[in-house]
Every structure is written in structure tokens, then in C-alpha cells.
Figure 1 (cartoon, rainbow, N blue to C red):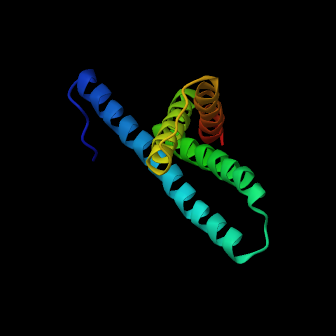
Figure 2: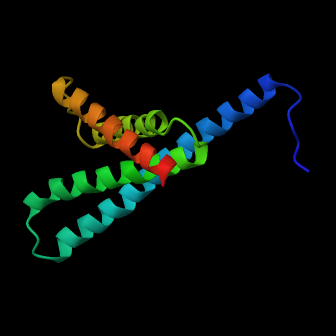
Length: 135
């Protein structure tokens, strides 16, 4: 028999804790997927005659798939508000990737480009979250 909380406050607290945990897992899943795929892309570029000008497109594709997958996972585990939870995963993923990019290159221009990247991360995350809830 499962343990049932004595009151609604305990139940609400448990739901919040599990939601944060599942958001973190979704972000971690997206980051791990990105790391593995980016290593494979680097290996592919090194070992084949694939031109380097295709690398940004491959990186964007990997990032998009990672956001969709991570946000879908998180929203499916949380079970509610797929668009919001997925959007949070997408936006946080973009911010973490930008922070990781600052380690490599000390150049970050704050402007519309940054806002657009975060917004697109939220939009793709929201789409993945809705997909995770409904399918």
C-alpha cells in the first residue's frame, strides 16, 4: 500500500519536488544527447570530406532534437502543463549551452540574437512538452 500524505500541503510539496527533479532530468537528458551527438559530428567532420560550412546546420539540428526530446521526457514524467514545463526545459537548455559557449569563446553579444535564441528554445521546448503530454 502506498503512503498517502496527511494533508494537501504535503501532497503539493511532493508534486513540486518531483516536478523540479523531472525538469532537471529533462535538461540533463538534452545536454547528454547534445554532447554525444556533437562529438559524433566532430568525428564525422574530421574523418570525412564533409565541408565545415555544414557544421552550424548540424549543430542547430542537434540542439533542436535535444530540446524536443528533453522537454518531451520532462513533460511526460510531470504529467501536466506540457507547454510550460517543456518551454522551461528549452529555455534553460539554451542558456546552459550559451554559458558553455562562453567558456570556449569569451564573446557574447547581448542583443536580439540572444533573445531570439532563448525564445526559440522556449518554443521548441513547448512543442516537445505538448508532444510528450499528448503522445
